[in-house]
Image (tube, rainbow, N blue to C red; front, side):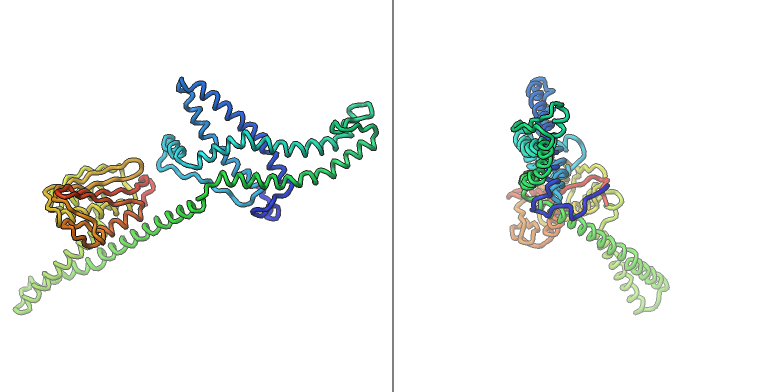
Length: 436
């Protein structure tokens, strides 16, 4: 596809070349006429058929009619403005026509584009037709004088219905005048097109377009940081599992074989204590590896990992968690450690006899609630950890809250005196096909 050279394009904020300005205004006329007819038909048919329900989709189409027109106008604006006009619409959170419609109807830019369509159909294109039509009528009437004289056959022609050309020299003089006036009359069209482009940009680009672009870039950067953080965690886990843990296992086996030789004291006692220390270190490093990233979470998913937490909790836990398929690894990890921290706080501080973990997905968000029947009174201290004695305290939940915040989620706590205490977390959960 051929593209104009940079020298052929106007600089931002300047008036476009006359030919481009004329082409921009000229193409507005048929587009505006079609838009006017479409809006009138949709409004009339939709209003007439609204009682029969058939008109409701027509009225909905009328509301959304500004979207395709705005998309075309953004492309057409490139005739006079080299700066691209970005699409302000966001991506729906999930596939499906209903989700798409709900997203578009909730966006301010959809209603701005509808206002632009109404303004374009009823005001702008008639004014542009007058501007371009005046130039074409005057110059075309003058340039076409010899043709009209030849077609008339009577040796005379009416020029712009203002005077009568009765000879061929007069006819050709009118033609020359039309050729001379053509660039002179098209020159003001540059400023008409410039004003039209400024109005189009003001209506079709939301005021926070730059901010929205910056926010989108920050979201992408945040996602990359989360992925890098999780990759580093997994690397540390593999290094501990394949390196230090294997060496401790070998050391423990060697010490065990040495004890079987039954050496004389005091070497036997030293070997026994060394073997016990190695075994204890092996247990600790296995717990550390499990704390970095549990294998059950990687192999079987979030529900199985939460059920494993419930089995290891000193307080009985009922799990009613429904998660369809697998989620993003960062989401699963964050929710797992949030539930783990909540259950640890319950076991340490609440005095509860039973805990319930419930949750599920709805509208693109995962919600998990941890509720206990303890004495309540928990609050988020300065560090963000729940302390049931009201004294505030450590920083356990602060890390959980920070991790959820990075993913666009939130951690909430409700713990009135006498209970119950409810930890509630919400986090966006992208479709399973985007899991990394």
